[in-house]
Image (cartoon, rainbow, N blue to C red; front, side, top):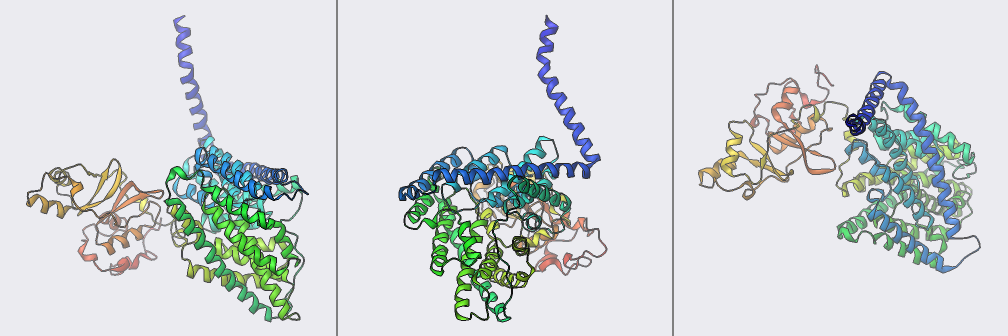
Length: 614
């Protein structure tokens, strides 16, 4: 009887042990046949994501038809449904799915660069439910950005459930993102480019094969279930006269200016709402619902993302007044709806605004120069690309996407002219791309486009001290100096309950002891709270430059999602030794050296001639 009870008590432990053994065997098998297993996972992720995006499309459309039945033009519906829907979804987002707000693209990039590829199953479910309901209620946001987070979430959940290490889970994030875009836009090539250009920030990423396979699989699932129906039916266009190239350049200028206005307005509004008390965020989305409902009461076209009107503009059948009106209404509805925390993306709104802007400019140009310009639909198509390039800052994805929609090379040159012009103006007037700015508002510091090209070089993580000696803020000056001892470091990190506060100068502590203040705690002394910091995946020479400019011999290494979470420290000595330079080089010898160009053998650390560039 005793042995039976013992067996019964040990069975859960044996079950857990057996599960760990199976997981270990799976990981061992994965490491041995990494490429083959990754390809199989890519097929599975592509198929699952394709199915979910198809369900996303069908649920949104059918729920929308129930909420707004054909032939029922009751104004009360257009007012009440957006308000009620946004209020209900706002509560769900606040109470159950806090990570499902907004577009999904910055959240996906944050998962890749700051959270070891982790997107929870709850977030995936919440994103699907809340976004589908929000869009069906008439909120004018898009489904493509949320699809990216859902696809990346499927990849993340699958990878973690299979017990893959974090680096492999992170590699699956762009795979799921590409599969989502391929199904959402019916553009598999543009999906591959988007995953590499925007999500990874590296067109030469080693996951290219898996991204292509997942994109093709998801696209095949979409065609199998919904048929080969393009997102927009576009007639063939042609360049009527070389004069049109100048008009397309002007369209690029207008697109760049509208992109900047859209981005700045959205960021300013969102910043305001984020400053409000957190407990009030459950009703913030209803503000967007009220605005959309009021506009929909008077102008039904204000409801929804408006792909029907995009199609009309592309075919040149939309009146100039309607296009100008939709620019104003959609601009207001989208920026307020997004800023207040509704679930939905900005891909679709960018395409709509671009098509309306291009169609309006094309209509005016065709009226003034009918014999030298194409139909307004051609300009609407190019305008879509110009706004996408200006807002999303993914010009190559924009060109490929429009090409896949039209399957016509004639529009490529005008599209490239407008895209580059829009991108140039937008990047000059709004330095920070919208997705990086949105993540920054959430306290997450995504790597910039310049850093992307350097992430695979020598990084801070390779030389940082992961468990450095620190000084608690409650410690007295005397105790701190005992800890410091004869350390060569001139600055030490100070923490309060594991929260990084800043650096304190050892010289300041010694002066305090001399002045009879040895019993005071460190909290009574000024700390360099604004000291420059680095992240573990940033290039090592960046840490060296920042230490040189700030005249420091130490830099804190902080988490990308929380700058008060100290992951370690990096010292001048460790950095120099990693480059093969003697650790005796003093701090004073580095003063005023921008980029340390004066150090023999480093030469600005560009190229690292003769050194290993791991």
